[in-house]
View 1: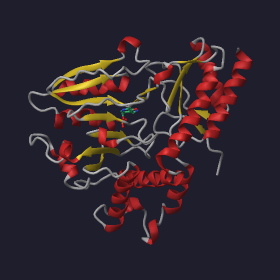
View 2: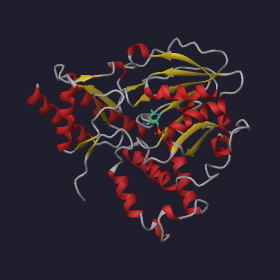
View 3: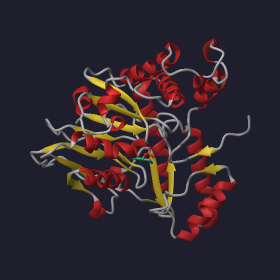
View 4: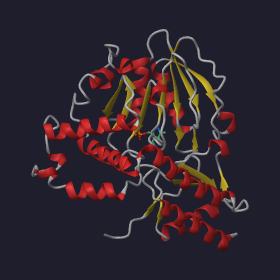
Length: 362
Ligand code: PMP
């Protein structure tokens, strides 16, 4: 095998090497069936075993709360931006949103096409460099739900605690930080994530929802866009993205082998501290974008003195085997995405590179 890249891609992103190797070993002949998992019927017992294992492993990692269902859907987290209001924003209700940045805005934009929305809190004034204080949040009485984006992948901010919304279901887009730490699922009506950061490859979107939110959708919605179609058919109404779901199951197994979510969080905190300390201790050569109390454990956004120097940083980093350090095209700057599967040693290598770059250019 050739040398693995120092992969800091934002998504699709690094997967655990152990998972890739296991998938490779099982690729051509899955468990003695004489075929790949990709080549078998999604209605057969072998595939269904994997499918059900993935959903029970996920609930197990979250402490097996009662009354929740896992759905495996397609169309990415972006389709959830529309499915949530289509299914839950019924006549006379309003969809409440926390406006924290690029992805929250995309969710709001879709909801506006479907029904009435309200921005319950926003960090727009702060150019989305922080998470707004939600401790005194006022929700409209007719709120169908409160939607937030637990981690803004582009800006590099992350919630550290979630608001108490009482009887209003709390919904979180956890696409870029799901399973980066333990969280109390019982606080949420629904959480969802495109798999391609912390859960596996692209192609599947995981929804975990309280049963009553997904068991009975308005009848005018087309079948594939109704939650109840998927909830009442174990996500097997149509052909699921079987290989992606198999990979999610393997990533979940890997998380268990790491010692579960507490162990994963400890690693993530160590990794993030290493990189943020390097930024903070650079005497202003590197500058973190997000305000300190809202910094993401997953997407570390930072800048150099000017765009020319940033270009040079990216060019040199690529020559040294670092991938994905360019910030999102909408905000510029630099970004290192350090999801669960990115090893500590890769961040150590990045910090060494940053120090060297500063010595040469500082
Ligand atoms: N929400 C967040 C927070 C994201 O980071 C992304 C993808 N980068 C999306 C939604 C969109 O996900 P998808 O590409 O799966 O539609």
